Image (tube, rainbow, N blue to C red):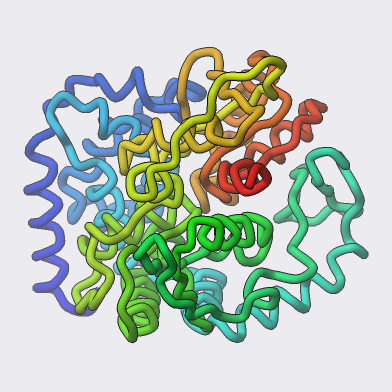
Length: 423
């Protein structure tokens, strides 16, 4: 952090946000990480105590501060249950930016965020190259779920059961779209997101089929970049702002009514974090125009649940944290599943909870992530469901991994896929 005044200003902003925390400890009962470890340093109260006086601790042991801050899923469960209304996610993201600005990014983080994510064309070419050869390094794990595992001991893959890169990503199947408003009178900008594009293109195709069925015009420009959440979560504000600026320029070149994504994380990031953490102009991408796809279908297009039938297929719905906690969207995905005739939503034992994915948390703390996700897989099995559904591609990866490793052969679908199949 070369600019001392800038550092002082950022630390002052943090202190202002921290004043609301009363150290009451209510977050202990909500934190999925603390529930597994029981460590005070893993719960929100402990991390907030660490952040208090961050400037001094950065000088004494910055690596320890960074390590503790990264042991958080950013699921927001503590924030929505905080009696004092502490903006926990904002605090953690700002603290990570400060500590990483002080320590600097690792070599791998610089390559990923500043050389790949901010160059979507290069990223797409590398991913396509990797898809060609992934079969040599992996073998089938569960054919029903569609997972694979590594043939050899590779550090990143560990014991994961993963979904392979799509042989033909969405951007190669549908390069771009610019269709006119149909009978709905609406035109949407479509932001599929990286995981949908590169691993679950069927989700993106389902969304496009649904838009066509409801005669909604679609603007899907070529060259879309990542929404920026991986960079922001890692404290790289510079890469985050570059990604936001690239996308804003793309989506501000024409008129549309709503910006729609099928990814809970992308929706939350674009709607809440772009205005909060990007200093530049957001053009057409105003928060009130950004919607999750299921919210758009129910709240704008008026899609309603179908009549109850006999012998309906049981669909277990997992609430993504970015929909449930950040956007308060819980009814709409369930209604869209029920709108597909022959399907009924079943609730998970114990109610909604984080699946343990957490983006980079899954990579840096895989054992802990799997410990949380394993219970989610068992809850899905206990529900008696024939299909597991969610509205976030990152959660789909985690559920697929956990179900596959637990030998629970239940397919994982995006809500949009289920609805699109009924049209």
